[in-house]
Length: 165
Image (tube, rainbow, N blue to C red; front, side, top):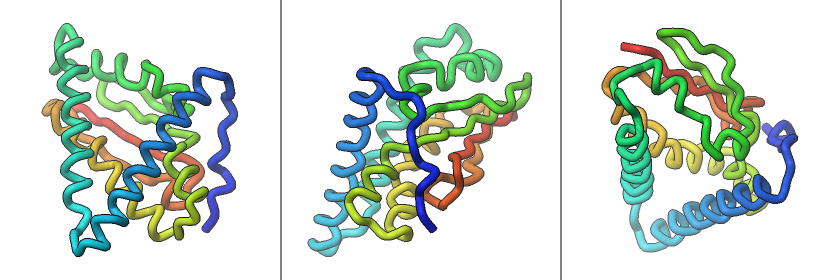
């Protein structure tokens, strides 16, 4: 498996800078997990910390919403910030009951490839990092979140699906 499809198409000073910050975060996560392993620790600390980051982001989004339990408002808000450009997000389905978004680029995978990580390590690092997305979604009890594949798994896109409960 290779990651040749993980190439950005949207390039500009601001987006490139935000991606660089994301890549530094990816490097830090991987390096922290490596150091913990050297000390006999597992990666649960990283999952917990990243999960808390996701919950904190969800709380901020819920606080900014007029009706935080509205699936329609969620669907109209999710992915409309700076992350849309960083990850080259594409809304592929948006109905009253479903929101499916494809991420066409991942700066995290880009960094892990640059670090020389194996495909297995990249998949595991992605799984750990996605703890934030899972916890983010749990803060919205009116929706179900499914991750239907990732760039880290060798797919050309990450497929995130939110369904109204």
